Image 1 (cartoon, rainbow, N blue to C red):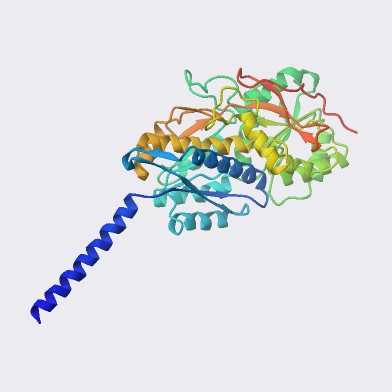
Image 2 (cartoon, helix red, strand yellow):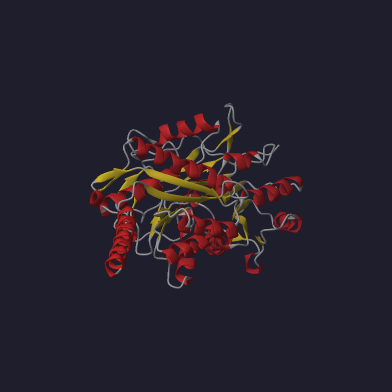
Length: 442
C-alpha cells in the first residue's frame, strides 16, 4: 500500500511539474507577436481610426510578407497577429476594450492609431497598470504632456508622437527649427496674406482637453504677432462639445469685423458651425482649423462648397521624400494601396499608422525579446527614419513630427475634394498646389 501511495504521488508530482514547465516553455517561446489596435472605426472620430488602423494593418502585412520580426533570444522570426477593435469613439468602450485586449487576447503590445485625448487617456492608464508598451499618436504635445504630468505616476509605458501647438523644440534637436509647430506653420500663411486683412481673429475650440489646449495657446501667440483675438478674455469661442446653435457667437464675430478664423474641434462640430456661419453671411478671408478638416469623408459630409479654402495642418503626405517603409513600400505606393482598396483619396492617418509598426518592430529587434521591460527600454533609445520621418523620443517619451499646410480644393477626380500641400518649411515635402486667398464664397 505504501509503495503504491508513494508511486502514485510521484506520478502526480511529475505530471504537475511537466505541465508547469510546458506552460512556461510556451510562455517563453511564443509563436507570434500579438499587437492590439483599439481604434475609433465608427462614431465622431472615425476619420482618425479608419485611416490609422488601415496603415497599421498595411505595415503588419508588409512585415509578415518579409517573414516576420527577428527575435534574437528566440533565434527565429515571428509573425505579427493584429487584434483590431472598434471603440466607437467612446472613452468608456475604449477602456473596456483595452482591458479585454490585455487580459483576454493577451497582447504583448498595443498600437492604437492617432486619436483624440479622450480616447487615449484610459488606454494610457491601462498600459501602465498592466505594464504593456504602447505606441500612441496624434495628440498635440502641450495638452498631452500636461495630462501625462498629472498622471500618478506619469505614464511610463506609452510612447507618443504628434506635433506641438506653439512650443518649439530644443535648440540643436532636429525638431528645433521651423515646421514642427502648428503656430509657425499657420503663421507662414499669415505672413503671406495677413497684411491683406484687418488682423481681427475669431478663435474657437470645442471645450474638451484637446480643444482647451489649442484655445489657451493661440490667443497670446497671435497677440505677439500683432493680431487681435476677439473676446478671448471672456472665453468667447470656447464652446461645449454638445453645442449645435452658434448664432450668438457668429454674430459677435461679424459685429467685430473678424476676417480670420482660427480654431480646433471635431469635424461634425465645425461642420455645423460653418453651415450656420455661411447662412448668416459670415465670410472671413482666411480660415485655419485643426482636427476638423483632416479627412475627406468628414469634410465631404459638410455638403456644398463648404470645404473650399479651409486650411489645416498636414502631418503626412505621399509627397514625403526619403521616408522608407518595409520592403519596397513608399509613401506613394502606400497611398496607392489605400486608394485602390477603399476608393478614397488620401487619408493622412495611413502614414502615421504605418510608422507605428516600424517603431515597434525596430524596438523588438533591438531588444531581441518580447519582454515588456526590455522593449520599453528599447523604445526610449529609438533613433529611426520611418514612413513618417525621423523618430527619436525626448525625455517625456514624445516624438515631435513635421508639419506642412494644406487647403481643401476642388478636383476633377472621382472624389470632389482634395487637400494638397500649399506651404512647407521642409525640403522633404514640397507644395503641390497654390494657396487660396481669400476664401472664395458663392
